[in-house]
View 1: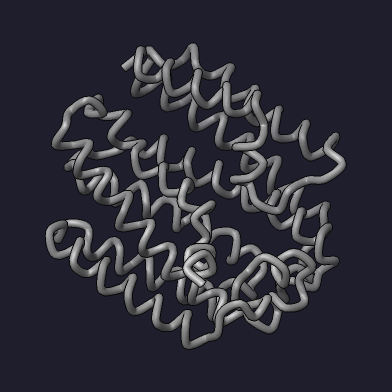
View 2 (view 1 turned 180 degrees about the vertical axis):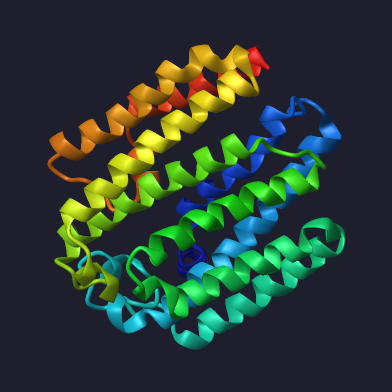
Length: 278
């Protein structure tokens, strides 16, 4: 049962919260122990907060998940390995743990509450509104980055924030395409309002904007990073390549990114390049 509790928290999705460390990297504080400790604490807070949201979403979407070809096999509630009461117990436990940690990190309390409210509204209502569902998820990534900035008391460039938003929109739109392909519009109601053509248009616009805003950031804020721009191009092109050539295109962007060696190599090279440049 412990394994099912663990899976209910979706640990493979925790890696998304790494985005919290972006302010730490770009503020040149990565190797300052106090700043790193604060950022790591925020990282733990958002692991707990996002796990609470994932569990809430699984409870709310239980009927739909039972119809999904993958979710009905892999999610503990959908496959009946756990009951709703087990999920409620875990939510309470994680909530208490999060409260204890936030007591010592009061500066991000409001941001974490905003994150929880935004995602609860998404699970209940916003996920059924075409386009708004994509925007809401992208905003949740910005909230994470904002928490990372506030925790170490740094202000992140607006150009970089817009870039992060566009990158999130790019990935979640590709996720919708994969969901349509895998579930044939059955896994969530909003999928019936989409099609590949409109999603690919959103993907093209968001990727173009992300590259433009990253370029503006490098030129106007940190010229030393301009040589990393080709890595950004290659990263987007690689993701497009996987979509158009892979026989099986994963629903989860996390699985796609961390199962592709070229993308992993690009990420490592980009991080190293940024650390050298700043």
